[in-house]
Amino acid sequence: MTNPHLVVEVPALFATLRKVFPKPRRRKILEVVVSYDGDQFNVDFQGAQYGAKAVGEWKGSARLNLAMFEAIVNTHHGDTLAVEYRDGKLKLGSISVAAR
Image (tube, rainbow, N blue to C red):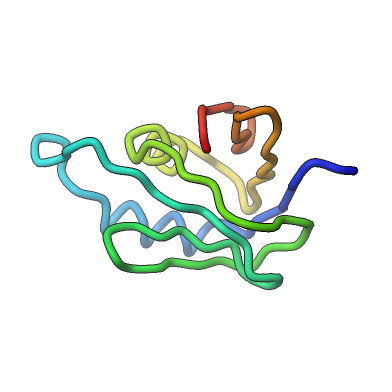
């Protein structure tokens, strides 16, 4: 069995997310939920869903700390992002973060 993995087209998604993330001084401990619907990589945050075209295999969802995901969004360069989940870690590009 292979681990869940995706290749996500991120430029428009990350540009949008940079605008909607809260200011650091107002941030409480928040999570984002990432999932895949067979066509889109979805990021659920505070009742809103943002998506980007993706290909791969993924079932279910993963929850991770907003600050960690925001750091990835703000520092990632490139048109695609490889996403993989294995052993309680979500690997987004070259960065691994704890997720459930």
